[in-house]
Length: 142
Image (cartoon, rainbow, N blue to C red; front, side, top):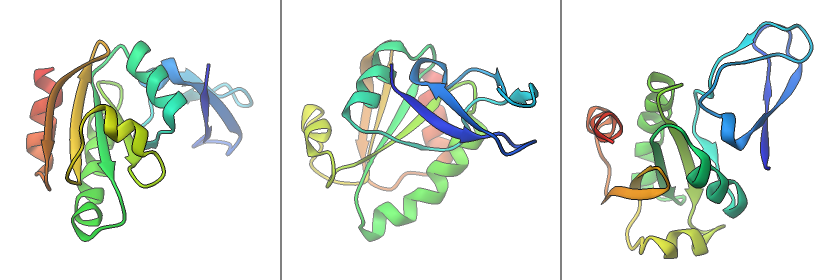
């Protein structure tokens, strides 16, 4: 199982969060204080992407992006959405230049491109910069 590392907001200790627990509250291994669910977009490689897709207990928003102007415009909204939906959704970012094979699976032609997954299946996909409120509706509707 792939994991990401995260600093404890209380003591700064590094904690490993398994891919199937990104939406869960945990405890710091050092100070034992609560670690809130992941509240930022997680950069996904193919292995992490597949694991989250297969095990996420909540809807997943995938932001397919590259270093273009529209993608940079969308990034702050995607980050804000991850904070708002922490524990109720997971937000992944897939760099289409680094991982074109993931984008190809979903026929991503234009970026930014947003995909909502629920129970391992794509339930919605849309290209173009989108308001955060609309992205939130997609996740809440999944």
